[in-house]
Image (cartoon, helix red, strand yellow):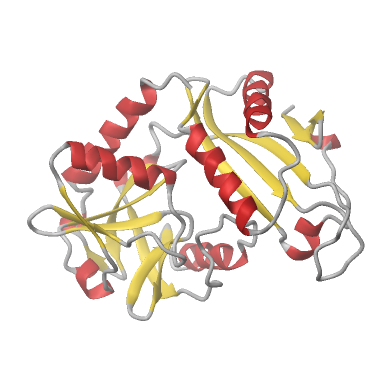
Length: 283
């Protein structure tokens, strides 16, 4: 049985509980992070924890323990669950208090963590590529904060599933923002990688940052700017990145085949480079 962490205790998942008055449950008043585990090692964990700290600061949400203590618990959970490949999820909420929209003055934040086994390296979607459809981006204007208010992302994912594809790309003011849980990219005919610049419209992906660095090291040109669906339909390649997918090629957007409907070589190469980096990690 999976062992979880809830507010200072390691518990079997059947015993893991929080208060019905927890503000994460009542208001989605909380933040989260997901880090990937490969060969029992947590990949790129430090920037994930730094982003957690930033999200907490933006919401004026105090972390209940230090980042070092959080990381120690993460490593303990990986060991307790014998996790070799998958993800570790952590969530911080403002904690339990009587229901009131205003922030409570005296409350202890809640911290939970759990692991998930997932096939990361040999994921089918990484080999076959994914298909996406576009939908309006109806989220709030602070998508740069990694909050637990994920209802619209969930609706977007279900919309994709109902359409027989794997994901959606959200569009605001005529430009692609991002996927349901990933950053979006296209590649031009002359191998220029285009992805939206960092701002409040998208999450600043940790994997995004590393992929762009790896691409620059390969001498590839990058343009951080908004791109339209029309540009995407005519792209040489397209792909997405996230902590648990690394790089997944996109082979179809709204019924338009990308790169002949096959995963592109640049996306495949960037994935290989990321995995090489992950395997060499000492985390």
